[in-house]
Length: 77
Image (cartoon, rainbow, N blue to C red; front, side):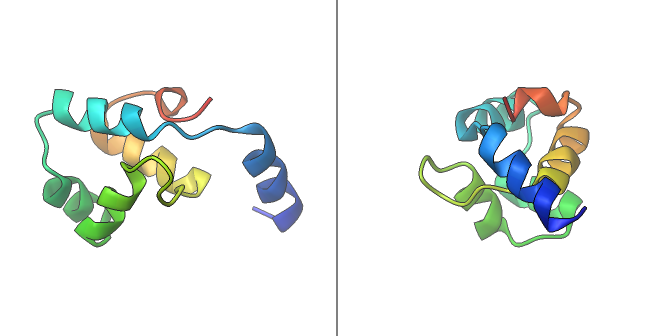
């Protein structure tokens, strides 16, 4: 994805950390398990779940959604 499109998405898409927590818990998964599914450190999942923490790239949010069995729109608005 080119930089211009990425910047547009950042300006128009709002990531919802609480939705990630809710979806992960509803799936019965731990942060460690989700991190393992995505091949990223557990700390990164913790950062994604924290208000004011890191915001995942759209591609990562999409991978999270697939791992949790939810539509990506659940995580971003």
